Amino acid sequence: RAKTDSKVDVIVVHKLDRMCRNVADYGAIKIMLKKHDVKVVSAVEQFDESFSGELVENIMASIAQWTSQNISWEVKKGLREAAERGRFPGVAPVGYLNDKKTKLLKVDEDKAPFVKMAFEFYATGKYSYESLAEELAKKGFKSRTKKPVGRKSIEHMLKNPIYYGLIKRQGVTAQANFPPIISKKVFDDVQEIMAQHSRYADRSRKHLYPLS
Image (tube, rainbow, N blue to C red; front, top):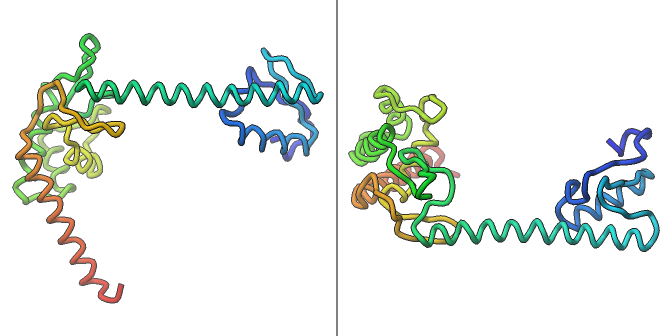
């Protein structure tokens, strides 16, 4: 708004890190604001338009960037360590529930049978993602929002190794310490069927567009 509204001459922020989280962005914003004679005022930090004030301001922006990066690093580190210990870091995938006491996943007795059914049905080779979604919807399978589960969700679920007990998160691959819903053989069978369907789709596209 400062670019187009000449009435704006001051922008008030609680702290500089609320305006941006890295020095490069902050510098670009400051240059733009100076062109329009707009000042930045912090509600809790003290600095002015002098050279020393700009130095303090730049230091604060650098600290904000370091803080943001450090928090991000700590979060990722925590997620990696959880995965290494066999815990699933994050919201439980469909078929499981987060156990707040143990910090582990527990089988969702309502949804897990549908997950198992999805893998077993697809492993027959008779279903596409769409037809499988339709079949599961007929049997009462719904998302957490009580809506029918769509094609993309089915595809994502069938590709997720968590269901046979393997965690892959944050660059970590580890054996889960909670019960699997399917066997690794069923998972591998599904991956093979998916690969076959993909190869068939590729051949079909080449047949339709021979010059592409």
